[in-house]
Image 1: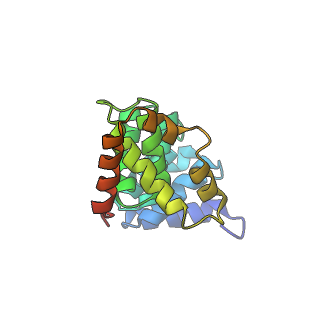
Image 2: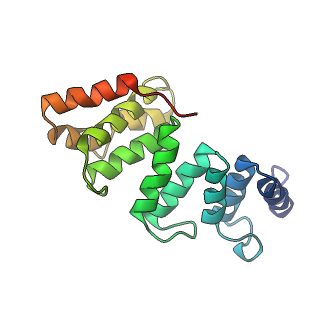
Image 3: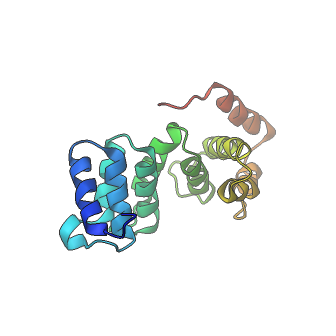
Amino acid sequence: LRAGRAVPAADLYRQGALQGDGVAARKLGLLLDDHLVRPESYGNAISWFERACTLRDVVGCHNAGVAFEYGQSGAVKDLTKAFAFYSEAAECGYMQSQYNLASLYSNNYVSPPNSIEGYKWMLLAQQQASACQASELCRWVLADPPGHRQKLESLLSPEQIERSKSLIESWKPRR
């Protein structure tokens, strides 16, 4: 791929993905998303992101979540599926999925609503972001320009905020 040969790279990624390599499946999905290879030859990006997730690639799970949240990469918008894929990655400790889960809760896209759980995910994402403040993404998560943290806090009593914080103390990434 670095030599500018996307098709041979895609062929190798497909071969790796079919042999159980989740990173290869995700990378093939990214090639498709970037329009570097044709979907007629390789399928759509979402199928490879889903396969990556099945093969335990956390970033692939996150990418599938994004695809379903926004209806892109060959996915039809489906917030229930977005929630499921984000949850998979968030439970494994992936900061971006933790933040996106908090966003879904904040925007009331999760049924039943659960602001305590949403706030937990926001705090976990920001906890991780505080350790990488040199990164633009981490600074963005900490700044929270959309205001999801404030929105979630406004829905919670002080006791519920403490409940969210206590959930964090016992939380551990799944893998």
